[in-house]
Amino acid sequence: MADKPLDIDQKSCKGCGICYSLCPKKAITGDIRGKVVLSAPDLCSRCGICESHCPDYAIFVRREKK
Amino acid sequence: MRPDLQHLFRMEKLPHIWCPGCGHGIITRAIAEAINESGIDLDKTVIVSGIGCSSRAPGYMNFDTLHTLHGRALAFATGVKLANPELNVFVITGDGDATAIGGNHFIHAARRNIDLTVILFNNNIYGMTGGQYSPLTPTGKMAATSPYGNPENNFDVAALAIAAGASFVARGTAFHDKLLVNSIKEGIKNKGFSLIEALSMCPTSYGRRNKMGSAADMIKHLKDNAVNVVTAQKLPPEKLEGKFLIGTLHYKPYREFTEEYDKLIARVQKEGK
Ligand SMILES: Cc1ncc(C[n+]2csc(CCOP(=O)(O)OP(=O)(O)O)c2C)c(N)n1
Ligand code: SF4
Image (cartoon, rainbow over all chains, first blue to last red):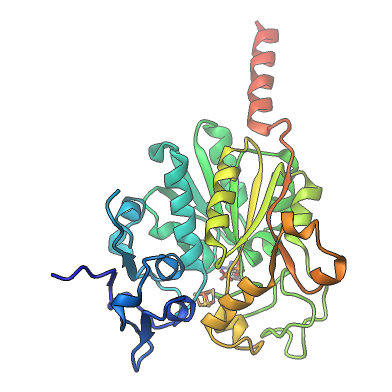
């Protein structure tokens, strides 16, 4: 399986749009309801700004194991 | 939810009831992260809140928690801490909860310098009840109770806490979450009254009425208008107009109430023998 940078919990997402407004790489966008989708996984740098600013804990960044 | 924080939440209670884009969720996660990183004993940690959207936060957190009466979180927390000073006692409160109905408890808890870590979720409004203005609603802003703009002056709650006697005062925001985590950790370390003002956002009851745009616009507003207190010292006053400071605003440890109270008990017991 290709290594996905983010896990998104669609059930928890309320579609506020904060995450994709902050994403510096435009790796995530909103669907027609405004809910987050990982549209360009290759662009994601795993910076985690989406994860730490999601009010609904719907995004989890898969970090490299140290 | 990040797996390393899940043990700090009552996962079965999530998703929470807060509105889409409400800043309270971000701040709640920052509190959990700060507690996690500070290494305090989770079984000796109590989180107390009053009433409001912000005060619902402890209900999602996996600690001994007390959801009390509107404005009375600090009164309950004072009781918990005095009864058992070895507990780490946190207070989660809103701007209305802490500075309107609970204003008296607020100044006197600060005056006593009792060892509590208070995180004040400041969304500038009474969110839960539909947007009445609070003592922290800036002058001129629209609220359900000020349809022509708030005619009153607002408190600067950090300055109020410092004047009343708090030994640690810091400000973070829902955008500056790392700074917020660090401020809460500093507050935990301080043996005394610690206030961390966390600027939140209420798109539903405040943002909409004040034409502040979406939740994403509101968080950008926090990002763009905050100036770190260290940077601010080097800036001319005109560069700070309309901005607010973030970071540690005050740190001056001094005699703490529960310690003084224990000394008093020891002294009186000795004298009575
Ligand atoms: C004694 C009492 N008075 C009034 C209320 C109604 N009430 C509930 S929450 C609230 C205001 C909450 O505002 P704030 O503390 O700023 O929290 P927010 O909801 O904005 O997070 C009020 C007035 C109440 N529950 N109890
Ligand atoms: S009313 Fe405001 S404070 Fe309450 S949950 Fe909604 S956005 Fe948050």
